[in-house]
Image 1 (cartoon, rainbow, N blue to C red):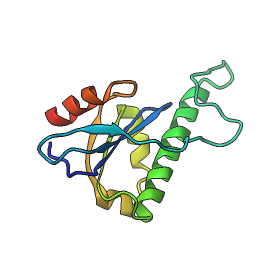
Image 2: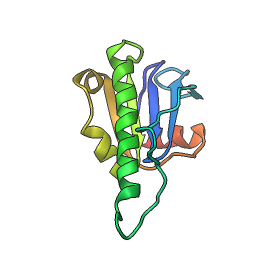
Image 3: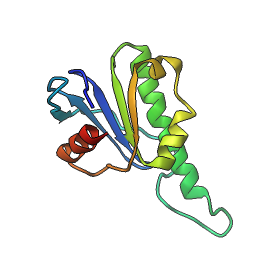
Length: 133
């Protein structure tokens, strides 16, 4: 996959977000980590995988809220013109939840989506997945 220089690559699951920028050119990916403010869901909620007999979906609900928070952040960046090109790599369930919250401005800059969990992987691993995709 060819990605223009400056493309932001968001790698996410229901608990973690890693942002990278393509510092290389279209033909030669070179992902560098982009610092970002912490993405948090509502105060007092947890994104951990806690369950109880009374609420077995609590952990999944927290992950869904986190995924929605990621998209809210990306939507703001897209609306503010801070991102020109975007690729999202996310765990399949997280990606499905994220899609529900895309603003049309984000959809307009979205170059590609990959339904794969690469959180915690190195930039080189993400580069390989992008090159294969």
